[in-house]
Amino acid sequence: MFYEKCLKPGLFLLDPERAHNWATFGLKALSRMGPVVQILRRCNQVRQEKPIHLFGLEFPNAVGLAAGMDKNAEFPKAAAALGFGHVEVGAVTPLRQTGNPMPRLFRYPDSGALVNRMGFNNDGADAIAERLARWYPVGSRSAPLGINLGKGRSTELDHAASDYLTVFKVLADQADYFSINVSSPNTPGLRRLQDTDFLRPLLQELQKENKERANLMGSAKAPILVKLSPDISYRQLDQALEIILETECAGVIATNTSSSRSFSGTEKYESGGISGLPVRLRSTQFINYVSRSTEGKLPIIGVGGVDDPVSAGEKIDAGASLVQIYTGMVYKGPFLAKQIAKALRNRSSSWF
Ligand SMILES: Cc1cc2nc3c(=O)[nH]c(=O)nc-3n(C[C@H](O)[C@H](O)[C@H](O)COP(=O)(O)O)c2cc1C
Image (cartoon, rainbow, N blue to C red):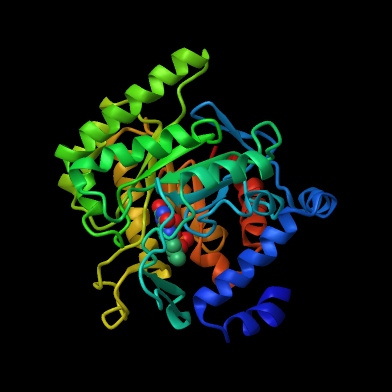
């Protein structure tokens, strides 16, 4: 209520990226205020009676923050204190990059959508590893941390695997899970990495490094999930799932934004990836397909158009174990995760 009545009107007067930067500034400042963030966490954290155990991790509730909101890992602590049950930061590339020219983020309030063509603007793996070690270190976390990996804009597809490997190695000590982003529409060619010829060697190399590292450290392998595009065909999805299972990945994140303009009313939208309500159904159908074709064996994190308990429940009914939100939070405010997580907790007996 406070957000929609007081904060949102002001933020929505600003250019969307500027509003995002102000929100990031506020959340980052909050993350640095130890006692305040503690109190906030005590007030907002939603713990299910039975926490969710997935790929070796414990999630206090089912609602996470989707990648792209905190690209530079500036506020995972504040996000966890707002009620998120996990936080995914990034996408992170090996080196700092500025992304595409502005404007590159657009709101469509009438349809509850955003379009972005950010292009992996981020501070680079080393700076982000340092920041996480300082401000959200392993051992202090109230919600697991996922790290979304991308490739540098100028890296040829044939060398993409080495970018993912570099970021994996730099951030391996910080991540609770990794999300391999081969589905952003805003880095030219990136989505071709979902094709068999690229995906298989990419995941094989990452898992080889993952296994060697685990042996060396005497620890378990890090869970590696693959984030997929809602725009691929079911044939392509079948092939991708085969590789994901064969390489023993921990799960799938479904889905990223869509560059399709076949959703009603989106024909004239800016170029870039659509998120929010227009992709809700497509993403749920995608989850349903993954769940059925893998006979529920592959954990799924469902994302795309979740903005209330019903849309979250829909994804869980379709086969997702966890959900994530981004666009819903822009329209409905910072306490949306808490509200949805509470509602899911009350209905959780039929879902978990
Ligand atoms: C501005 C913006 C930036 C994003 N950046 C990333 C990113 O870096 N990596 C990624 O995997 N997904 C990224 N996403 C996609 C979201 O994580 C999510 O998959 C998508 O927005 C659908 O969820 P939603 O409808 O709740 O927003 C971004 C989305 C937006 C709106």
